[in-house]
Each structure stands twice: as C-alpha cells, then as structure tokens.
Length: 82
Length: 199
Image (tube, rainbow over all chains, first blue to last red; front, side, top):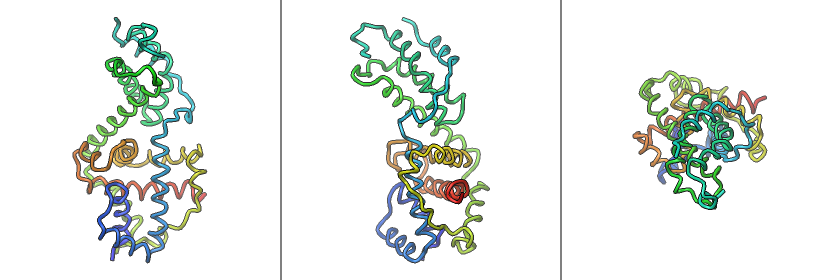
C-alpha cells in the first residue's frame, strides 16, 4: 500500500511523464481509500490549471503597463545603425 | 506593418518596434521574472535577436506576437539558467525546505498529519482563472518557494515541451524533476489554502 507521501509524488510524476499501468493501479487503489489524497489530487490538478494559465497567458493586457522610457532609449542606442 | 512594403531598413523597422512595444514587452518580462534587471536584459536581448532574425519575420503576422514569442523563449532560457545555478548552490536532498515541507505535512509513516489532511476547497475553476486578486496571491505564493523550485515550476508550464525534453535540456533525470515539483506543489497548495481558500 502506498503512503500518502508516495501517492502525492506519483501524481506529480503522472502530470510530468505519465505512469506505468502498475503505478496507476496502485495510485487509484490508494486514493479510493484515502479522503485526504482524493481531495489533494483534485486540488493538485486545479493548481496545475491555474498555474498554466497564470504563467502562459499571452494577454499582456491583464497586467497594468509599466513605463520604462530609460530602457527604450538604451535599446535604441544599442541597435546597429545602417 | 510589412517590412518589405514600405522599403524601410531593418534599423528603421526595429526602431519603430522598440518605440511601440518596449513598455508592453518590459511589463510582460517583469511580470514573469519579478526582477527589474532580468526583465530589462531579456527585452533588450529580444530586440537584438529580432534584429538579427528579421528576415524570418513574416509581414503578415503581428510584430508584437512575433516579439513576444522571442521574449517567451528568452524567459524560458532565463529559468533554465537560474535552475542550473541554484541547483549547484542548494542540492535537492539536503535542502532544509524540502525536508521541512515533508515534516510539516506527513507523519512518521508518511501519512497526512491530522491537521494537514486536505479537505475539499469548493473552488470555482472558471471564476479563479482570471480573478486578478487570486492571481496575485498565486504569484506571491510561487515567489515564496526556494529559487530552484520556482524555476522548475516555471519551466514545467512555460516550455511548450514534454517533461522528458525539459529534463534533457536541464541535464537532470525526470525523477529529480518531479520530486522537486512534488515539494513545490505541497508548499504551494498550503500557501494557497492559508491565503485564499480558507479566508
């Protein structure tokens, strides 16, 4: 029987590279008997979705624009001139 | 804006892009790295790369989208470097944070401690995705993780690659990587619970 620590580790493995059939069965067996890990699994998947959205959304618009005129000037001065 | 149509030189094209997009690129880089100097360097690199690769830009696509794609690659590279550097300074098994999170959450038989056992959150996923305040809490919880855990989390999600590829590029075994992600997840979950779900 898997421990809760091992079961939650397998969930992480699952989301990164997938599990073998044996591992999947062991994990399912564990969560079927463990409320804590069942709740954790749901939360873990939720956190992954929220993180993916938070870290990859292309909508620059969600963050208020920060002015950086100095940077603009610096980059312009570093661009090669033709 | 078509590069070829208006017969502008590469320098002129780049100059106009720098004027138009520096602020939004910088904002994005700052949001992704939480570090002023890194963000500035990444944006500058992005424009220099864009200059060198200008012939690869197709006039029918949006310059901002193209520049953002370059910037996102630079951000991933930034986290790969950061990950490699921080791994050298704190080896994973020895990190106190790693040991601490396990001791906090699990008993001596590696079962949930009574007071740490997860309970359902009643969260509405769709509502949370674009909830500004939630995303601020999420970013700040992420920012509290040890540096190389943070880099690992960023890499897992910003790289459009599978786990094995990410590990290859980092020169680590997948086992190593998911074990770090495991610790990071336990800590992040706890932080979110305290600062959001249990409020």
